[in-house]
Amino acid sequence: MSGALASGQRVAVVGAGLAGVCTAWELAQRGCAVTVFERSGSIAERASFAGAAVTLPAAPGLLPAQPKSSLAWRWQQWRANRQGSGGFPAAWTALSLAGLETLASLRRELSLEDESHPGLLVLAASSSEHKALEAHASAWAELGVAATWLNAESARRLEPGLARDAKLAGALAVAAAGAGNGRLFAQALRGHAQRAGVNFRFHTTVEGLAGGTPVQLRHRYDPPPEPATGVRQRRDAADTLSAPPGEQVEDFEAVVLCAGSEGLRLAGLTTPMALWRELSVTLPLRVLEAHPELGPQSAVIDAARGCAIARIGQRVRVAGRHALVSASERAPGPEDFELLHRALQAWFPGSGQHAQAVHWHGVRAVVPDGAPLLGRTAQTGIWLHNAATDWGWGFACGAAAYLADSIVGRTSAVDAAALDVQRLR
Picture 1 (cartoon, rainbow, N blue to C red):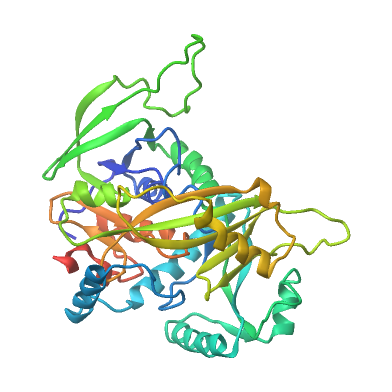
Picture 2 (picture 1 turned 30 degrees about the horizontal axis):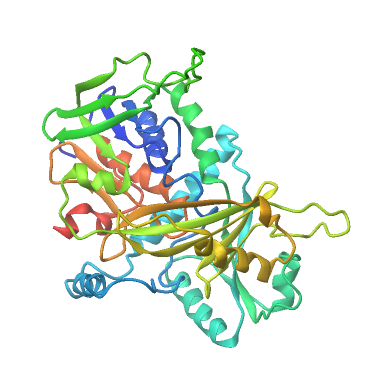
């Protein structure tokens, strides 16, 4: 491939969330000298902090349409479909399956511990939901994903903590899916990436890019303030390696943007974009000797409520989408998280210690056709990894490997051209 990087070439990754850490690891494995820039003080402190703790193959229409989207946004979605860029790309499923394989390989080969549990059930509370899941199973089968329909009794054998009085017509079992703590995975992989030579620079904001050969990256290091007591504040061990404060300019052969909406801005993309708010509640599981089955054994999706319930260690996390929002909109209040609390209580009553719940919200950038953005931008040397999906954080592993192959000129095992940034031009 023309423009492929040689071994040892310098590559910058902007953002140290799941996408950024996975991309840095894959690039380092291909011989690149990688520097990661992160404006926060550690790994996965923003959009990857407490998202849905579920990994699953991507499939169309599993979750309900966003109820609070504006008329203008719905028109943009219609226009994207009309122009042929919309629709569900098979490449999304292929990359998600490749990501799950990579995730399993990394867990095994690097002994990564991310509180994972195998298997997932998509619950159907009624016959109408049962029919809808049959359509999802058929769509998954066409995309190469095995999903098995279980009656209510079989589903409860896999998840004995499901409420006996809850209406349950059955469930779709997806063996390739499961539960896992994405932030914990990113933190563990970061250690291996450092040992492979990746340099992480925290408290460093990328302020601008100039594409070319090389790419010029302008950044500013703002060290955290020392505490008033005079005792030196503990900083991340990899924090900038004593970089001088203030603005600096460095040259790189390539830059990969893994920073959500900020990455889209740095790339200079003018495509319509919206921010999708995501909510989660994470709470300790009750431990009762008389009821050892309390809480989920792995993960379930309540498609009707649009939320996922997953076990991570001795905690349970319930996550869901909330609304399309503006950047200036207020932070969600307790009432916004109530649906998630109710979903856990409906399916796994008495399993969580609700008074100790930790509430989290984040936003992610979406484009009208709903698919990820991966690949080379119009600016020479600048690449984009904006591949967050509804539930499957394991997708980041597949997207990172595909992108790293593209940057160094290797032929990827998956053809993800349908997700290329240029489709939106």
